[in-house]
Image (cartoon, rainbow, N blue to C red; front, side, top):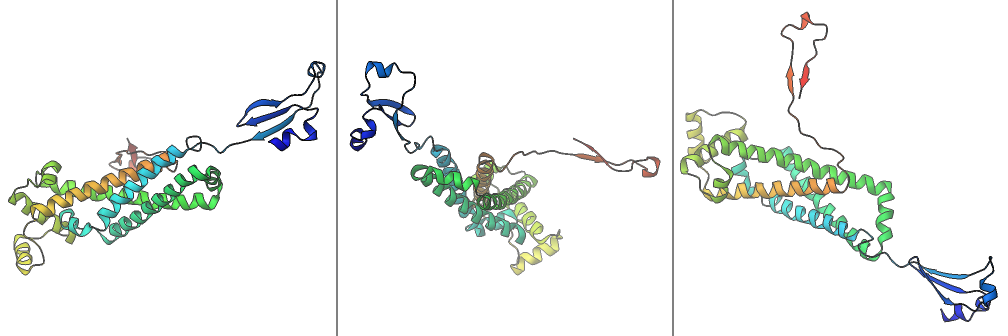
Length: 280
């Protein structure tokens, strides 16, 4: 700045310093007659400072990182501790298990990316903008969000499964989460869950024989049932956080849930259009 002020260029020109669009005159050697002239020259020194953490969207990135990393921690807890929850939920198919593990990895990747974006917002805000404009980055994030959202669907399906098992035995989620379930109810839940895992209904004789052979259990323990419900609740929370993160990040534009009733004409030959009619 001292070199600029002592420069010959400033002998006849006022020096104006602008910092973040705020300008002030630091040297003005003009005479009153020169100030009255309609055409004048100024020597302007402009400095643009680094955007603040807030201006760079840092708080938004920090919020998304908190959501993604919380979801990743819960998903890892459920995925890598799923052996305890498997009996109480009736077991998961190989497809659901694969989707769950893939979604856990995707949620972990979202956590890492969000953490790096928070760092960028604090150190190099322009980098996040460059990433957002990069087609490869956008495609990669869409794949990660898509896999995570598959996990949301798998979690919803598994949650509906365990709720259905409890409802068949007149047991509430609160009772199951506290372990306050009678022996008879735990026996009914165990049989329903294991028959669902086998994909068939067993006769009383078949069920007793498999229990005696050790292939099936007679009833779940209170701890098995309680931990299964609590883990599934954690999985549902993680799925909700993943959905919220994708919605906040702009990958989800619209979501809807509807129940449609499909009706066909009693005799398709009596109508010109035999296609089903959908009613919301």
